Image (cartoon, rainbow, N blue to C red):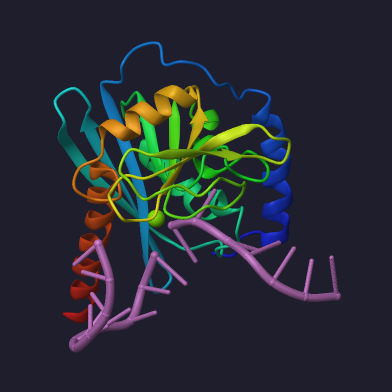
Length: 225
DNA sequence: GCGACAG
DNA sequence: ATCTTGTCGC
Ligand SMILES: [Mg+2]
């Protein structure tokens, strides 16, 4: 299938972002989330595997996992991750029930305040949080690598856009930012409550591992025919 | 113009 | 993100 040129997709996204930004809202969660969905993708050849892990926040247990396999139809271009991974996530979340999305990537800690978590949160009208292993945009003060310490990520105009958070002793921080319909405080509290033995919040780490398992399994199927 | 740059 | 064993550091 031939799709529109990448430049056209970028222009279209930028127009959509302007529209979406008007609906963007930071606010405290109305109630504690019951179901949180964690999102991550992996790749092989020209395929993208997008994975979904549904998690009971209260019971701290995985409810179900699933994945969607598609052809890659946009390259990785910094600040345009939404075009690469967004469509699959939207497809996979259709007809699903959840109260909050936590996505591997940025929320508002993004040059256009439109990281993939914000983009999805507004499009799907759901609270969302972005959790990234690296910073994309903004500045923060270095902090000691002591679990629990955090530092504000500041945007171009001196505004708060997220946090660098140490989740494990002697490791680099993770970079968290609100996506949509959530406060900075809720963002920090919820992510902190999901930290286990590792740097990455446990369910996000698990969906990442799952995505690699799916990939390995699909690769074996190809090899066997 | 140069460099930085989520996944 | 991906290719991939050993190896360094905590
Ligand atoms: Mg990822």
